[in-house]
Length: 119
Ligand SMILES: [Zn+2]
Image (cartoon, rainbow, N blue to C red):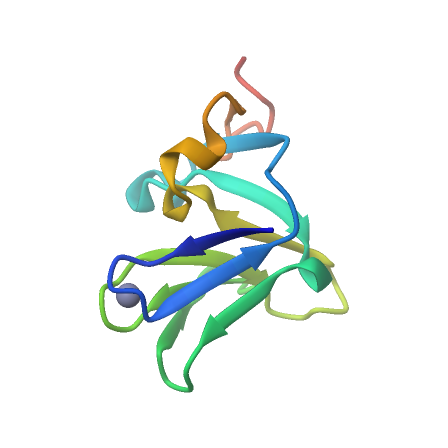
Protein backbone atom coordinates (compact mmCIF):
# COMPACT_ATOMS: atom_id res chain seq x y z
CA UNK A 1 0.00 0.00 0.00
CA UNK A 2 1.06 3.54 -0.69
CA UNK A 3 -0.24 6.66 1.03
CA UNK A 4 -0.39 10.19 -0.33
CA UNK A 5 -0.80 12.97 2.20
CA UNK A 6 -1.58 16.65 1.92
CA UNK A 7 0.85 19.20 3.33
CA UNK A 8 -0.91 19.67 6.67
CA UNK A 9 -1.74 15.99 7.10
CA UNK A 10 -5.51 16.37 7.40
CA UNK A 11 -6.20 14.37 4.25
CA UNK A 12 -4.61 11.21 2.94
CA UNK A 13 -5.25 8.89 0.04
CA UNK A 14 -4.39 5.20 0.19
CA UNK A 15 -3.79 3.13 -2.93
CA UNK A 16 -2.95 -0.56 -3.21
CA UNK A 17 0.23 -0.29 -5.26
CA UNK A 18 2.82 1.96 -6.82
CA UNK A 19 1.52 3.48 -10.07
CA UNK A 20 2.84 1.93 -13.28
CA UNK A 21 2.66 5.21 -15.12
CA UNK A 22 2.02 8.86 -14.32
CA UNK A 23 0.28 11.42 -16.49
CA UNK A 24 1.16 15.08 -16.80
CA UNK A 25 -1.75 16.83 -18.51
CA UNK A 26 -1.75 20.31 -20.06
CA UNK A 27 -5.49 20.97 -19.87
CA UNK A 28 -6.74 24.23 -18.40
CA UNK A 29 -7.08 22.88 -14.89
CA UNK A 30 -4.24 20.35 -14.63
CA UNK A 31 -1.67 22.88 -15.80
CA UNK A 32 -2.80 25.28 -13.11
CA UNK A 33 -2.87 22.67 -10.38
CA UNK A 34 0.49 21.24 -11.43
CA UNK A 35 -0.78 17.75 -10.74
CA UNK A 36 0.73 14.43 -11.78
CA UNK A 37 -1.98 11.79 -12.10
CA UNK A 38 -1.89 8.15 -11.14
CA UNK A 39 -5.04 6.29 -12.20
CA UNK A 40 -6.75 3.60 -10.18
CA UNK A 41 -10.05 1.84 -9.96
CA UNK A 42 -12.08 3.99 -7.58
CA UNK A 43 -12.93 0.93 -5.51
CA UNK A 44 -9.21 0.49 -4.73
CA UNK A 45 -8.71 4.05 -3.49
CA UNK A 46 -9.41 5.11 0.08
CA UNK A 47 -9.75 8.81 0.83
CA UNK A 48 -9.11 9.37 4.54
CA UNK A 49 -10.39 12.68 5.87
CA UNK A 50 -12.56 13.93 8.68
CA UNK A 51 -15.98 15.25 7.75
CA UNK A 52 -15.60 18.75 6.34
CA UNK A 53 -11.85 18.39 5.80
CA UNK A 54 -12.14 18.41 2.01
CA UNK A 55 -13.60 20.69 -0.62
CA UNK A 56 -14.61 19.71 -4.14
CA UNK A 57 -14.50 21.62 -7.39
CA UNK A 58 -16.04 20.77 -10.72
CA UNK A 59 -16.42 22.71 -13.93
CA UNK A 60 -17.51 22.32 -17.54
CA UNK A 61 -19.74 19.27 -17.89
CA UNK A 62 -19.14 18.56 -14.20
CA UNK A 63 -18.33 14.92 -14.83
CA UNK A 64 -15.31 15.08 -12.50
CA UNK A 65 -14.79 16.57 -9.08
CA UNK A 66 -11.38 17.66 -7.86
CA UNK A 67 -10.87 16.97 -4.18
CA UNK A 68 -8.63 19.25 -2.14
CA UNK A 69 -7.73 19.69 1.51
CA UNK A 70 -9.82 22.47 3.03
CA UNK A 71 -6.92 23.53 5.25
CA UNK A 72 -3.77 23.52 3.13
CA UNK A 73 -5.35 23.41 -0.34
CA UNK A 74 -3.41 20.46 -1.76
CA UNK A 75 -5.18 18.77 -4.65
CA UNK A 76 -5.58 15.13 -3.63
CA UNK A 77 -7.60 13.42 -6.36
CA UNK A 78 -10.32 13.62 -8.89
CA UNK A 79 -13.37 11.43 -8.69
CA UNK A 80 -16.27 10.79 -11.04
CA UNK A 81 -19.25 12.93 -10.11
CA UNK A 82 -21.48 10.04 -11.13
CA UNK A 83 -19.76 6.83 -10.00
CA UNK A 84 -21.97 4.79 -12.32
CA UNK A 85 -20.46 6.61 -15.30
CA UNK A 86 -16.82 5.90 -14.50
CA UNK A 87 -14.99 3.57 -12.17
CA UNK A 88 -11.73 5.45 -12.60
CA UNK A 89 -10.18 7.81 -10.14
CA UNK A 90 -7.11 10.02 -10.44
CA UNK A 91 -4.76 10.36 -7.49
CA UNK A 92 -2.34 13.28 -7.41
CA UNK A 93 1.04 11.57 -7.23
CA UNK A 94 2.68 14.84 -6.15
CA UNK A 95 1.45 13.97 -2.67
CA UNK A 96 3.40 10.71 -2.47
CA UNK A 97 6.88 10.77 -0.99
CA UNK A 98 9.17 11.42 -3.98
CA UNK A 99 11.10 8.19 -3.39
CA UNK A 100 7.87 6.18 -3.70
CA UNK A 101 7.40 7.16 -7.35
CA UNK A 102 11.02 7.52 -8.37
CA UNK A 103 11.61 6.02 -11.80
CA UNK A 104 7.93 5.77 -12.76
CA UNK A 105 7.47 6.88 -16.34
CA UNK A 106 5.69 10.20 -16.78
CA UNK A 107 3.68 10.61 -19.98
CA UNK A 108 2.61 14.00 -21.29
CA UNK A 109 -1.06 14.10 -22.22
CA UNK A 110 -2.36 16.81 -24.50
CA UNK A 111 -5.62 17.20 -22.58
CA UNK A 112 -5.85 20.79 -23.84
CA UNK A 113 -6.69 19.77 -27.39
CA UNK A 114 -6.03 16.36 -28.99
CA UNK A 115 -6.26 14.03 -25.97
CA UNK A 116 -3.22 12.20 -27.35
CA UNK A 117 0.10 11.63 -25.67
CA UNK A 118 2.82 14.02 -26.80
CA UNK A 119 5.68 11.58 -26.11
ZN1 LIG B 1 -4.01 19.66 4.28
